[in-house]
Amino acid sequence: MENKRIGGHYSHRYDAELEEVVNRVLAMGGLVESQLTNALQAFIDADSQIAQEVTENDTRVNTFEVTIDERCVEILARRQPAAMDLRLIVAVIKTITDLERIGDLAVAIARTAMRQAEGDRPRKQIFRDIETMGNRVISMLAGALDAFARMDAMAAVEVVRQDFAIDSDHEAIVRQNVTFMMEDPRNISRLLDISHAVRALERVGDHARNMCEYTIYFVKGRDVRHIDLSEMEAIVHGKKAPAEG
Image (cartoon, rainbow, N blue to C red):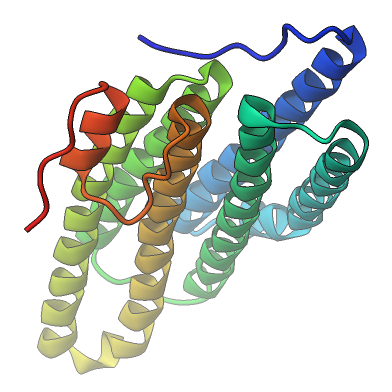
């Protein structure tokens, strides 16, 4: 396992400022993870009360993003960070953007849960499959946050690998919903609503992958966006990336 530690500056206050920013990101991440967990529970159980709590807590997520962003700008202006310190600030700013968007997706799922609670629900099999996918997504988000907390590039790569399974879950559920729509057109509206929630879960996986890419960027100093997994692994393990074409 390779990870990087924050600190080692002549100014202990500077070290403390960087640690504070990282801790705020992790606190925001914990809140977002809780929001997603509650949104999934509300959706599976058709619990409108929990869904309402998720929507009301979204302002806390937004406040985290604004305050962390302001703190990063302050550090950039006063400390003029370079090298790894600058990469850390960049990674933090990008990570909180993805966390805020995950928070928005949790709210979207919660709102779908409130609509679904107002009538007859489609087949239970749909919700069992969505619960399985949702738990996989929550695990991926938790893994991305853990990799960030430990600044562990290798762990980040392993989390990225999970995104392929989530994509497969999404495709399977969408195909299943289309079949159910054909069998009983009366359920089309509700099944489309469910498909939007499943799409939101799939997008959470994409944002968790983004967070892992920022962790790798901080540790390795390489931008690994828009490359395939084999190239990403080569960079993290210090090997020559496969030739293109």
